[in-house]
Length: 116
Image (cartoon, rainbow, N blue to C red; front, side, top):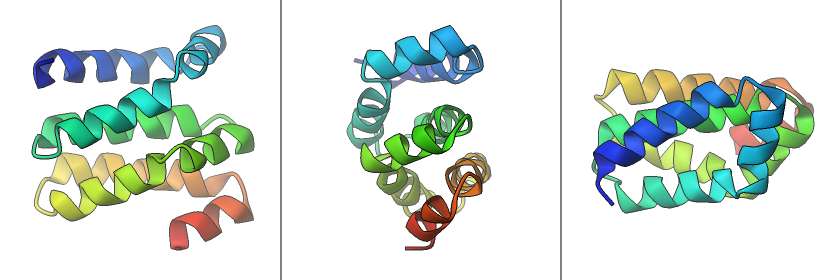
C-alpha cells in the first residue's frame, strides 16, 4: 500500500475518533494495531508518522481506558520512535507531543508510562 493512501486514511481516522460510535468502531476494528503497523511500514515518511501520532493521540484522549489501550497496544513506542526518527520534522514533533500529552493527562499511570 502506498503511504499517500495510508496518510489519508490516518487523517480520516483522527477526525472520526471525535465521534463516540465511530471511535468504538475504530477500536473494534483494531485501529491502534493498524496505525502501529503503518508507522512501522513507513518509518521514513514524516507525514505519515505525524498523522499516526495525531490519530493515536485522538484515540487516547477520551478516557483513562483508551489511553491505557493505546499504550498497551504499542502506540507509545510508535510515537517515541517517530520523535527520535524525525527530530527535525516539526509536524511530527508537534503531533507526537500532543499525543503524549493525551496519553499522560488522564492518570498517574499514563504519566508514568510516558515518563518511562
